[in-house]
Image 1 (tube, rainbow, N blue to C red):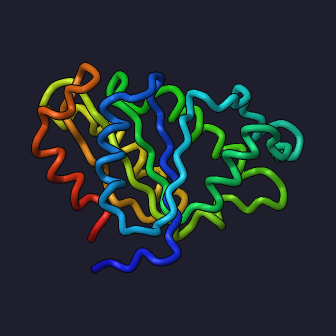
Image 2 (image 1 turned 180 degrees about the vertical axis):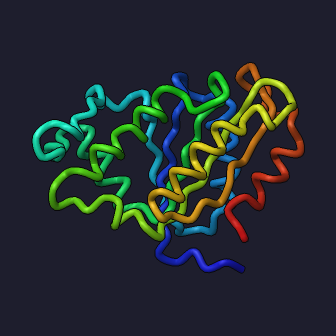
Length: 187
């Protein structure tokens, strides 16, 4: 049995609609975590993040500390030991809310005193996605984005739980995904 003591999972729901197949798949996997493992769920589409502006080459390249919901999301990110980006596959990649969240990482790395990249090192990044069709290689760009993000941040990447489902509720027909969800968070 894997030791989950002290682990804090942050589930970042990237869909633009609630109750979709990706969210259902993430919930199936999360239900397998041992009792007492902290889970925090955030619906990214409901977070009012400011538009991301690249100011790395302006002045000293630093960013101001985030405020409002951006600060709430930064704090939740830094408190988590495990981050689960649950994004449906949109045009072969992450959804807009999920990508927008990762864009803010670029700024957070440059906020004086936050030490975002150093503090993220050693944490674990997971992905969950549902895609139309059965060719899971269509999700390769999404998987690659998460894998490269983890590598850049010196995080451990534990892969992406994939399911084939298009319409809401269709996840129930992917029995293989349901089986994979039962063991996704275990070694």
